[in-house]
Image (cartoon, rainbow, N blue to C red; front, side):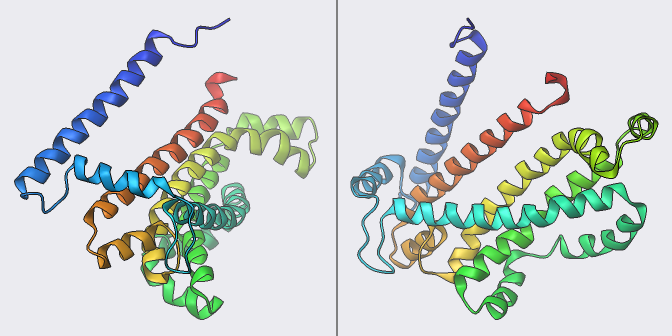
Length: 262
């Protein structure tokens, strides 16, 4: 039976808490330099305890607990991310396996990929006639590119020997896809998904600031209007923490499917 707490695990835990200490010191120094115009950790902690005392209250459309705000954002992120992935994976497989498809669609990808999510938002409003739909739309349209590019790269880099094996055994198209293409491209695909979920979580804040209603992005904007810098700092820490958790989750999946572990 493997040890749960190895030396490497202990080192990782200590490094993590060391990073938090360094962050706290820098934060406190910034608060001192700005004469506490930017609140320090102590005053922010007081407000944080108030927020988590009742995280899921609901007193109307624009007055919800921090827990409700966060889960609304997570729901939108995974919805937009899922829609984007359903577009990106098949398209990436097609582009990677066909030079004609690559030449046909790559210019479109390179033109649309750098477009800011804020530029897509008015089109989303026009198409869906609702801020909720527009927010999900901009998450989907901006998060699909890393998955698409990494998937197409993974497929296009399949060695000729692998392809020749499929031909030698007379694999059908479906068998080639399931036995050769997908297994080889899967680590690249998961890397793309890991990058895409990071983009999706990054975009949600800007989208909710524009759309309003409920969500962690709206919470930041509403806190600014209410002149509560402590709440803004709390939201920043929550956004960063959730982003870290999502990245670690996809990193674990990526590690599980890495070729060296096979």
